[in-house]
Amino acid sequence: MIPDRRKFEVLKPAVNVGYGRKELPSPRDGEIRELLVSTADSVQFEQVMLLMPRGADGVLAAFAERAASIAVRHQDERELRAGLLAAALALALTDEPREVLPVLALLYRAAEMIGHDPRLEFSSANALTGGKATGLVDFLQRSPEDRSIQAMGYEEGDDKQGFRFLRAW
Image (cartoon, rainbow, N blue to C red):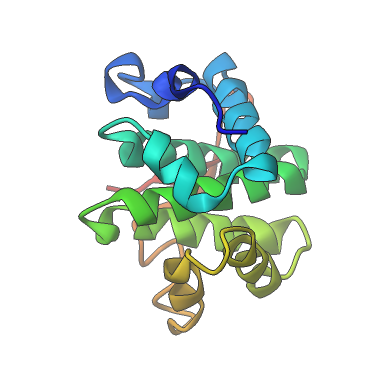
């Protein structure tokens, strides 16, 4: 059963102004996570792509960035996997994959920090999309230096509530 297109309005850029900078976690994080998890279980990747509003790639990339920090903060593989799914969708939607690439470094590092094999997590996320998230697999081919968070302009840090990946740019 294809979900109601209106549920995906939560991914419209106009309703997410300033979302990336909000405190972790936020109610919007939960809404996006629930949408991604519920549709991933019941809808084909291609169908989900058709439901996405214009500009959803930016919101999904922001969610993936936030999910990486939340995964580390709470040692939660579900957050990591939701972030990977969001990144896979963002890569498939965007005209500019370089804008999503830094988020992959955060998710890779988050997997390491919570004791999961990043290669397995990325490959599993690609499998969940029916092999359509090739950008995830391509990222694994990068040298360790080229997939580091530092190379992508991030550093490990804290905000008022705990661990958070911080932009160094």
